[in-house]
Image (tube, rainbow, N blue to C red):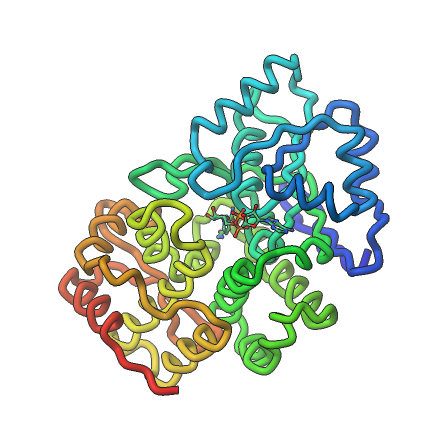
Length: 367
Ligand code: NAD
Ligand code: GLY
């Protein structure tokens, strides 16, 4: 193991373990291996990659532990799949002592966590995230859930994992577009909390993209530390955790509008961050030069900087009104006010928001 980061909570503390390229034969999962009542939840893609790649320890786990495999894709993050997992667990007579192990990206982590939170009123679960996005964000903090066709992540719960095991070896089989997608959440942390980290990212983008170990580990550790600090202070999103939603109101609208899976989550987040930043410029909260710096880092990594062409400003507003941050029908949005600092704004006039989305989509950038 290379790093251990603790998430200290009143009733559900746990550790995040981060492993490097050579520390594979890990203690990952002695806890899991020794548990006779574990079930792995994964998807067909991850399962076949693991079988081919011969990660010794994971294969050892798979040999000893039953697993339930779902189809790959955001479009399967739904209640029908939740039902199918619960059906499997009941059919095999798993009781409250079952431990679920989420082995996969954010989709697997979110569904498994949700099932863990409701199966027989709540059972233990571990996260073994296998995508960059899940390693830096989705596997930590206990947000679990599934999509509804009218809104992304609209059904869910807060249910903390009992441990998170991050092994960077998984990332070497991850398609590049998913590395890039994960980068959007990494850049998000820097814009929200840490200007020095943002500058470091500007300088080290290519090294991370080419999965250089030192930079990758630094980056994953940094995000896990930032997220652990937030969760410890605000587990259920009553104050500071809301900042982690930077760009997400716009992003979730894009994902819902286009149909789950058509736009990768990180790609939609990239556009969402740009729209939130543009709005902030319009509200005189963010200097234009910082806006361009934000657009440039996202562009340089290969992330989209504009939303789907056919999606109109009104389409955004309609879906954003269903966002979980809406209170008393008033939209609340997280916007950057500097690099490393964000603010929650509410009561933005609809006309300002509409114009802002329209102008942002029509911007011509010269880098
Ligand atoms: P994903 O889970 O769909 O994984 C992306 C793709 O990579 C899938 O095709 C998957 O099968 C494949 N894959 C996974 N591991 C692989 C590996 N090691 N090698 C090759 N292929 C691999 O998507 P994601 O980007 O990991 O997660 C996105 C989801 O996470 C969204 O549903 C989003 O809402 C959710 N999310 C949740 C939180 C949270 O706090 N709970 C935070 C951010 C995002
Ligand atoms: N990904 C946002 C959160 O965990 O709060």
